[in-house]
Image (cartoon, rainbow, N blue to C red; front, side, top):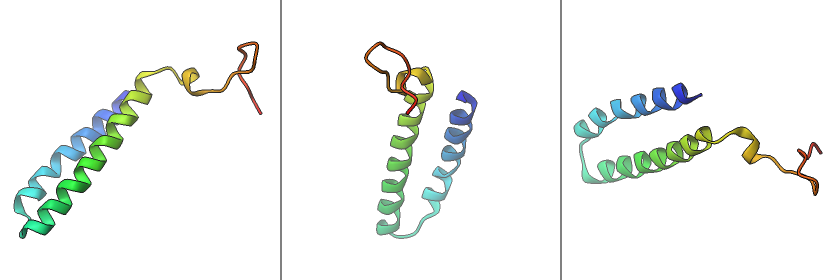
Length: 68
């Protein structure tokens, strides 16, 4: 799963060349905003991938996994 985050980060890095060639300040600002949101989401994904999946599950009163 960590490889997925690495691949996505590499893909995002290729978009910076697109930003360089955009004409108009409004397009550049919009692009910057979108990339900032994408990077924030990617950081959140990376934090989740770094933790074991069990930390995101619900547990009952005895500490057992809650299955429904």
